[in-house]
Length: 160
Image (tube, rainbow, N blue to C red; front, side, top):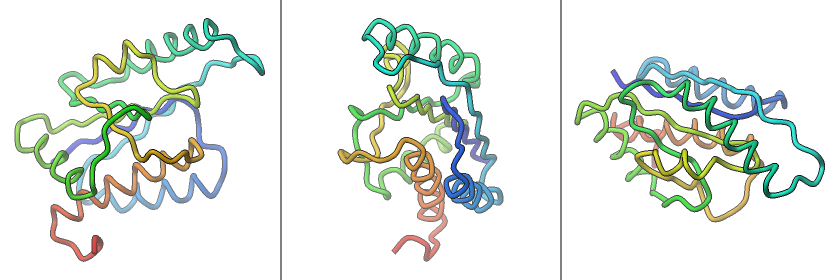
């Protein structure tokens, strides 16, 4: 069975995002082991300097690394990552399962992103879109795409 972890810096606070994420979490339960881990975001001043941002990202990366399961296929969610169609994303999930890397770990950084060194250690960098979305909405979109990817592999009518 596919094991999917989503590690996020920051916590969902808005009820509509919490409810939307929970819906996809519920839908995924019959198909995979799906877990969400939310880590605390470093507090930064109103207008942080590049050095302050870099230090915060490094601290957040250290906390994320502690949560990455051994031998997991890691995906850094970042704006400079490549983009995939839903079908190609489904194929990525299935390829991991078929090649013995059945634990996939998605890393979602804070509003400042992920530490560069952490991204370099990941197996893949993935971007949701060239468009900008609210940070917490992107987390819901990721959960939906994971569900869609599994439904594509199942031959479900969910993906049309």
